[in-house]
Length: 114
Length: 111
Image 1 (tube, each protein chain N blue to C red):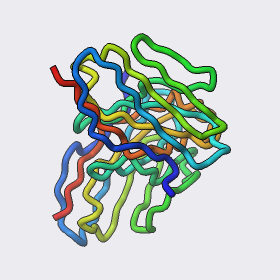
Image 2 (image 1 turned 45 degrees about the horizontal axis):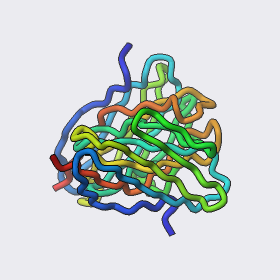
Image 3 (image 1 turned 60 degrees about the vertical axis):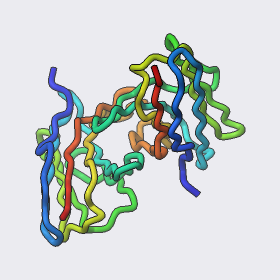
Image 4 (image 1 turned 120 degrees about the vertical axis):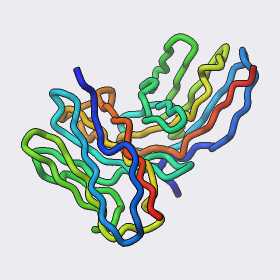
């Protein structure tokens, strides 16, 4: 049973560019959340998708957008990249109504903005 | 004030020692509490849930004090493999699945 998979694992972008990160949830999970983890910080919640809709959002600008597909996979898009967007981007999948013990993280995508 | 506050450390502890981490949270309505472990350049992984009654898993003991909005983690007989960053995590509502993380406490076990 595959867990949460993310791609790409590492990428380097230039300021002002756009990036798309991808996530496939654990089998049977239909809720996907995205987190940003800057160096030396804990992960920060970006947004969450359920039934192809953004269900809740953290304190991130509109440059951060997402999408969920009918197969529950998800994309995170970041436009007009800033140096400060350099971070580990984590995808987490879960079942609706979960208690927290059923949240699984992918290995993340390391984004470096130069 | 941060929603979840932890001492970032680092904690450098000799092997076999007991080490304790503390964490406070600001939202008194929070429902679920966890400790996650994160190894260097890896994803966070659930270590254990935290309950008011306290819970133990081998060498690890977690405790929640709702009145003080305080969470603790105790590691006994520390091993070299315990070296990692320990993240205090709060979930506001049952079924919400939005996790709020502290900054993490870095632990290094010294041989």
